Length: 380
Ligand SMILES: [Zn+2]
Image (cartoon, rainbow, N blue to C red):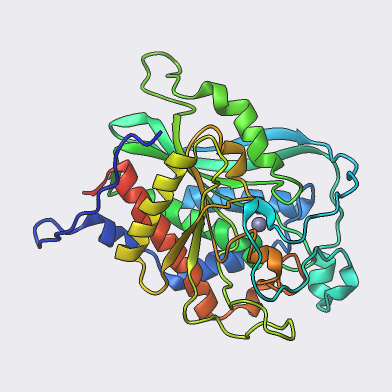
């Protein structure tokens, strides 16, 4: 439930400069890129491997270095089920309920190591996943006046495809980490809490976010120990997911190839799911984000859509307002081949230009500004 209407300050005087604009100015393209680059040192970070565990440790160390000291891990067990036979998909309808339009190109997951031409990266991605114990890390900015209520801001840190998972989802993970850095600034005060979480096991079917909902849904809003002012699981006010933030080169061309350049009219796609129990609240949250984009994002606009699907906000969508931010719509665009690097050996840091990285930065500006308003933020 949204407790407070989002309210954008319209006047910034010298005595009372807009704190949201000040926070947005603390985002930096080079720092965002460096965080993505840092994640790619662990290759594709496939769940259930040493490189995935090393990446979780590295993320935790970064969060601590930002001063997001309230760090914890969610532990769960993952046992892959044998793949069910895939039902023949209805090719006219996109996942999530949208409609395909225009030219479609092929999509799929690369499972062939030999399609990775870089021998160093091929070796880095070689260890296979084994079933068993899993961990995912989160940290929390504790609210000053309403610590028992929070927004959850997430991205998945695992990847697949024999590349570096730079865009899917190093780009979302780095966005969430940069927001954790800024909100953890010693001069930043928020009324409500924010939890920054880097999901594991997204690529196997949202297992990390599902485990979180199962384990923690019932703990919401409970002060523990009683009278301590501490809330291990603040009541959920909303869930905001970030998944593939960089690449919006448009629809495949007639020959199924993509433009090599970010299209000038690239946008941040904010999606909610029209069939969710909390669709009305999520719809409102999505437009709050679009308004924040219009006021604070430097380069690229936002578009709102109603077909959120296949991402870690889905397990939350019937419990709380849940949205996702993405480079394109997941169903009708990504599903129609708008991102040729998706789950491919080409999902490398070196694949993307500053125009691509800047789309991710604009998504970060959007979420930072919207959140800052929603949680009530002041700078000392
Ligand atoms: Zn993803």
